[in-house]
Length: 92
Image (cartoon, rainbow, N blue to C red; front, side):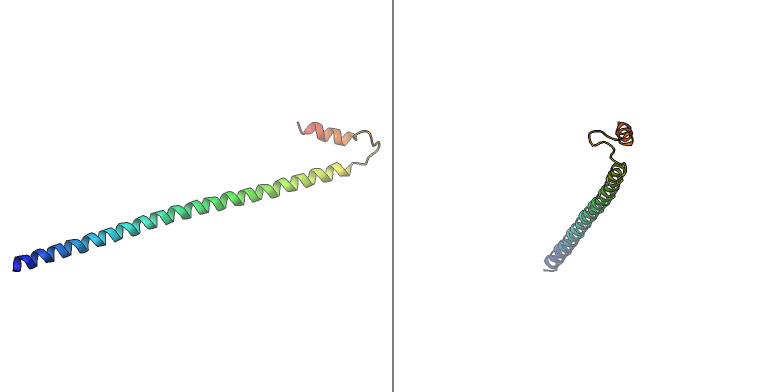
């Protein structure tokens, strides 16, 4: 009878170790997945911040070009002023 008790104890210990190892593996896998998701979120936030910065810069340049275009007085309505022509030629 003691042999059966020892065998049952060994099986219980082995089962407890297996369950503990499974739980540890599951927690490690979950932590790795969460770290990967966090890295992707941070990368997305950096890209979004860069996109916003470029949009602000683009809008500022467009505003400056618009101001420069309207700064030239209109001498003849059918023609562009010389400064406007130089600016258009500089865009190439």
